[in-house]
Amino acid sequence: MAIKLTQTEEEQIYFCSFTCLDWMPLFETTDLYQEIYKWFSFLIGKGHQICGFVIMPNHLHLLIYITKGQGTINSILSNGKRFLAYEVVRRLEVIGTSDILEILSNRVTPEEKNRKKKHRVFEVSSDIKPCYTDKFLLQKTGIYSFKSHSRQMALSCDRRGIPSLKRSLL
Image (tube, rainbow, N blue to C red; front, side):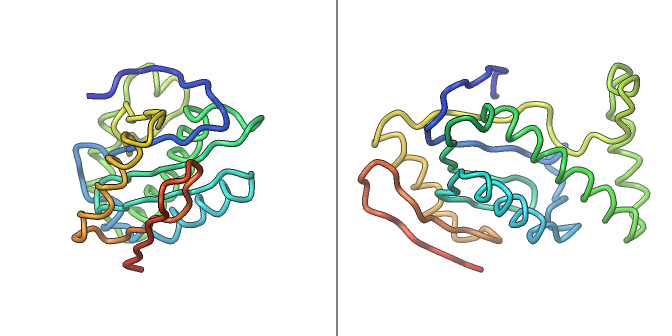
C-alpha cells in the first residue's frame, strides 16, 4: 500500500500508479482512454514528458519526467485525477449507470461532503516513486514490456541514457 508522502523533487522521472475505487473497471466502462490522452497532452504542453504508461481497465501506471517550476508530482497527479474523475462521473450519468454512481457517492466522507465533493472515483492513495537509479527505472519499464494484456501501452523517452523502449498497442 502506498503511503502519503509529498515528493518535492523537480527535473525527475517518477513512477506513478493510481487505481479506480474498489478496482472497478471505470476506465473501460466509461471508455476514458481519450481523456487520459488529453491529460497527457496537457502535461506535455506544460513541459513534462510522458516516458511510458500502461492504462488498464481499472488503474494506470505512468512514468513521467517533471520539469522545474510546474508544481510537485503530488499536485500534478491530484489535479489530473480530479479532471478524470469529473469525466468518469459525467460519462456514467450519460450511460445511465446509477448503481455505480451510488457506490461512488456513498464512499465520500463527511469531511469531503463539506468540501462539496459528490463522488469518490479513485482510491485515496496513489503510488509515487522517484526513479533515482537506472536499475529502478528498468524494473518499472519491465512492467510495461510484459503487460501485453493491457488496453493501452507505450514507452518512449529516456532521460538517463538507457536504451529507449517503444511499444504501442494503440
